[in-house]
Length: 241
Image (cartoon, rainbow, N blue to C red; front, side):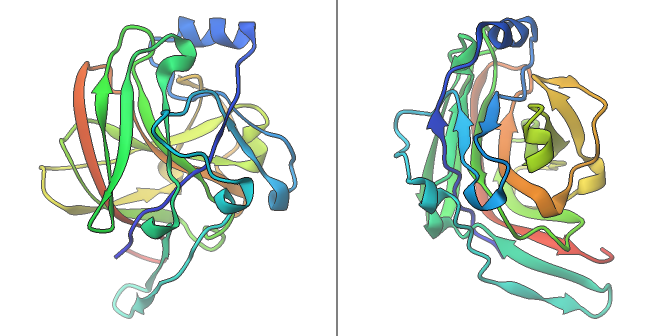
């Protein structure tokens, strides 16, 4: 089973027009993110807001993804999974809604090799908090993600970007279908991903796993209050469930 890891960012500012679009949207799920270079070997992630408690890693460190465990193929189903983002390979990075004047807070800690993401959502002025990190490899042969996690049953989503969508500020989202408050494994099919810009659904090409650039988890469920999510691992999987 898979531990979780880390995403790196460098703080950047939005243009005035982008901020106007973001403020007009009551549920801005897609934070402005840009890549300086389209070459995957030199990708650098630019986010507007980073929780101050999170140390800023070097670009080289951020671009490194550990794929250390390949789970055996299940002979009965043909399913094969590969773990991503071992938690020791920090950093994940917190991205909150301060870019649009929001006051939501989020933080990450590591407990028993698991990432814990906690904070408080304030819907007046943004209403989201997220954890993200760079991911430049590992999804080429996959058709879905598996996550082992435990939550407070709020409506969290997985977020992904690829190198082509990034240029148009498109982010792909899919809900984490969680039942109860215990540890559970959740499957997220790439076919279930929805393309959005600043929280608004858009008609865009499908997510391209072989061009992945960012992975993350976001909470933007339109409700005020504290939240808590624990993540044990993420796997990239292919084959029949």
